[in-house]
Length: 143
Image 1 (cartoon, rainbow, N blue to C red):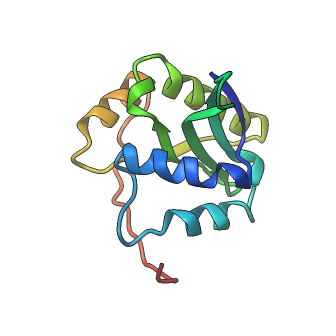
Image 2 (tube, one colour):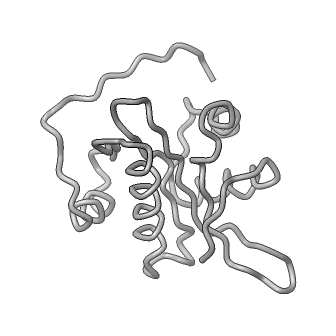
C-alpha cells in the first residue's frame, strides 16, 4: 500500500470506503466532512492506495488527521474489508504518529464508538489506552 495525501478526485472512493467500513452516520455528511477537512491541514488527510494496472490506483484505506496545537486527532481510519488484516491500519496509524510527532504534538487522541470492540482491541494493541474522560459534543452546523 502506498500512502499519499487525499485529493478531490478521491472523494467518491473515500465516501464509499467509509460506508463499507460502517463509519458513516445519518447526522454526518461525509462529503461535507471532506470539504471541511480540505480547509484545515489538508496534507494530514491520507489515503492508502493499491495500484491496479487495469483501472489505476484503488483507494483501500484512509485516515483524517489533525493537530490543534494541544492534541492530535485521528478520525475516519478505515481499511476496506477486502484489504483488512494486512497491516494497513497499523501502517496508517504509524504515519499519523510520525506526522504529528514531527509537528511537536505531545499526545494523540481518537474516539471509538463504545460498541466497536474490534477497533478498541486494535488500538489497545498499538498501545492506546482509554482516557478517563467523557466525550461531549454539540452540533453547530446541521449536515
